[in-house]
Image: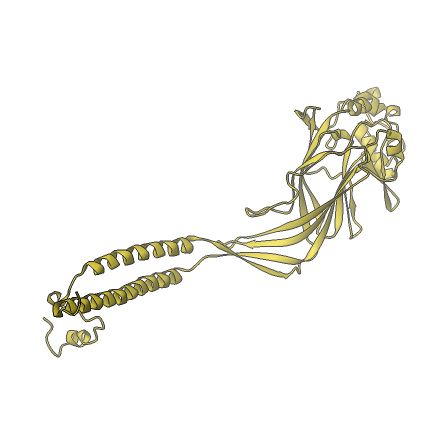
Length: 389
């Protein structure tokens, strides 16, 4: 018992939850059923709130992209079943005026047989230094550059050295069979041996994040003055086309919910002159994770267009045509950026919802129970008074 006038008695007077003595409480069947229903409802709703509390939602926001002078990776994995690796070149041109040629620093080319099986890596874009003959009079061998711009050491000891010297001079590499190093290495024979093969190109290229295009063409680009010219040599295989399968094409780092609309696309060329163009609209994306990590990426939409794919077998017409057959990716940069922010409900919000559910259901159940109890008592009194049969 609490002593009257004590501090405990004062707190007792503040009790907002007055208790009913057991002698005055009545348990009914309807009350038991309502209690079970209310408990099940509370369990279901609290479980739903717990799942919502555990779920991570993503909020999207569209803002103006203020980033400038960014670099961007184009991730590329594409198979050309009817184009030999050794004849394929990869160039990029953009609206800033920059042109990059032979971008194979981060690209691997895998040779494929006619049935699609892997032959091995093609090292033509990343040549190794071949064995060279001993020099005369005991001096180290120093090959001629045949009029090309010599490297720092003044020697062109391999066919690729001569080729690069020609490129620096702006000359076409038209007659490798007249160059000692190329004859020794079997350059032309090696290239012609790939006739009828296919190629899979995998890796990435780094470009300026401005409007531009990446192009995979047969042959090579040569800088002549301030302009670039594309040329295809007679000693290269002529039985090829740009049929292809795009296994992966994305821009920048990828995130889990990202979809790339060109992944899995397969196109078959009916002619050597077929030119495949893919126009992409790139929107910058930024994902802000709950742990504070920020991932910058890009999403894109794409349309496609094919030129010169009418069935034809006249190789001479193809070579004389002004339309260059190849695989083109045109990229245009949107001025907007989409920011995705991961969001999760706080613990106080979850507890507030749980309290609201428990209190609300018990209050409603008590009201319903009171209504049912009074109705039952009223019906019982009428039966006792004989007014209800």
